[in-house]
Length: 519
Image (cartoon, rainbow, N blue to C red; front, side, top):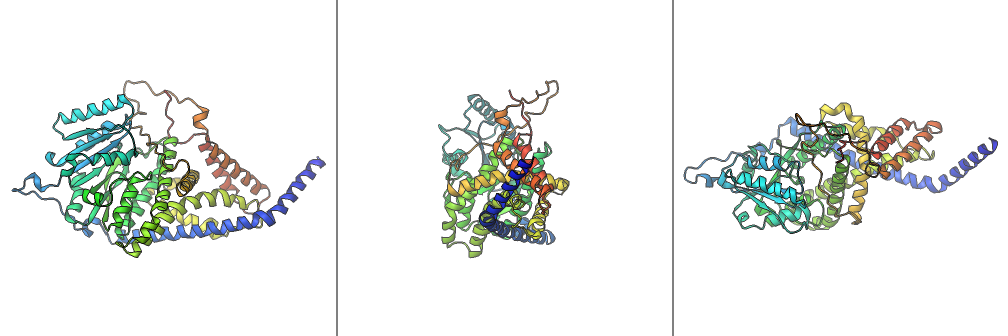
């Protein structure tokens, strides 16, 4: 017993002798850097909060700003008074949702001789390809002008498919192109509401609609996603559009002026965010974008943890990589104002796409827990409590119905920040998986039990698929820090640390999102 106490005291003495000269200075520097990044994010959120409040108070709607007017019939021109519209639906092995997306596109209300539906099928499963082709033929037999296009390879993934789709001769007849991913279902009046922005203002290149999630109540994970994406659409996109600064194309549920798309250089596959790449290049050419928040398109959120992790990797890695590739080009550009260039570089890219991911994980999951082990290092109350609380509240205003879930949302976002931070560094340094593209799995109605059918089997536990080592390691580290703070610390962070460690453990064993039955 005495021998054990002696060993413990010697280890404690060694720890304190090493922390003072070695670890403490480094940790103090890390705290200072994290506090600086927190302030950047804080002022960014406050700025956007003020702008969105101004927009709501003064009812600054895009219809009024851009003098939206419906397209009117012309007896002499007949249907030629309406512009020719191409509707592109890129898809890849979309067995569960292909009928929904094709059906919604074919149901768009527009003169039948002034619209072309183009299904760009990159499927590698021959059975699914046959199903998609058969669906296209079925709609063609009803008089719909629909084209089923395939290619010999998947070079460039979605960007490659869209680029190839624009090469067909019939596309030369079109003025605008509407793009919908395979799980998106536009309402019949979508074109009637979007196209007039483009016809009334020749300087507008893009009309972006908002996403409406059909499965947000499927599980707790989809509710968390809804909170994050609602802030993006209700605040970030709205602010960029209202201030004429910049907002990114979301890759779907938008209409492009084909002339602007071509002038910007068309689709490029140099990053995994081809949509953002195109938007930045078009913006640097002086084109304007319009975000229409009350124009909503139904779509599906990824409901499995695996699908969501892949999606977040792509959405975090791509912007960081694009920032690295384009920052010099943006600075040298002479067509746009200094304000717009500053907004693009600092606000849109650096703070939102890099700082936000890094500070969330490094500060709240690494540095803050470490401070309980080193009493020489402390975090001011405003940095540990007040600023993060304010940022969280500003983020949560977009989804008031889920405000009671805010604690779960904080813990889940911190877990996901592990993957976002990792992906951000991969993008910045162009490492390993920088150009990895994994199509987000859509389940459609696959998990719904149809009348008369058997209930889906319970999912079988597969250790290799369900265990996530990174989450478990981070969870163990935070749990250890929580135990230390409970027994020896003075910070009283242990309640947060225990909750956060449990969130990492739950994700680490794969008990997040919808569990799909194994076949």
